[in-house]
Length: 342
Image (cartoon, rainbow, N blue to C red; front, side, top):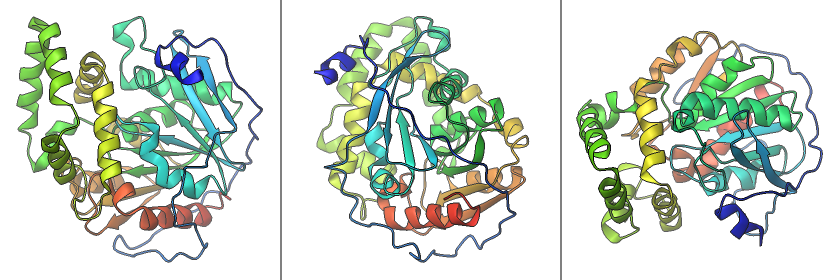
């Protein structure tokens, strides 16, 4: 029953239990070789089975502009906050959820305008800044005193802003294949996608209904889109059909107006100044074959952070955490052990 309620964005009931507050960790300066492949020293699970994994807490809260934000909490222990990419879904974290919910309290949530969260009544509030405000409000609502944030793709930009809003709560950050500024500047190793975005923006301003209808048709899960997504966003030799299909279904469910508002804001977003303000330990996970946010973008992030290290996933795509979940999870676990967050 609750699923239908959430789909209609008419949530009036909150399922809540008190999350366990976390403790302070000691910061450490860390350095590792970018090419070093981690060993599974912690005996992490590798089956990634989430079929029987249910959240012990799920509900909604009202953000500062009264937008309803949906969240789920799995496991017990110190909190990990997972921030997915634009037009993605919570299911995109299933490999990390299956692994870390056994050791940590894993918090998942939906961005405004995504899945079970509502759209803001003010269209001007569909921005990365407002997504970051939602994170700040969520952590306050859940009484989380410390957290490690993990972001993928656009989640890197959102998380960068959220950390600066409340530095005291973030004990470390983990960025996976993301960027903190205009993603079209380096996408596919060129800036040609800027022009595509400009044209689509003009068309949407002139005939929003036609463009929105076209979006629904073009994002349908068919063989053409499957091949396109698996080749450009995933490692086609490693990715599972279910992961690509899940991504396509998520894209199709998001209205074009939401996608356009956020991606348009992303083109103007400048997180470089925020990176320079971040002092907590940071792990940057980069995909060697990432065409959406190429490795040179990750190199720039590392050089801008005061206390960071990179782990490169050979053959990794933009979705390295689904292509190579074991390696990504081990790298994350080793990093958390290194900074004493256990």
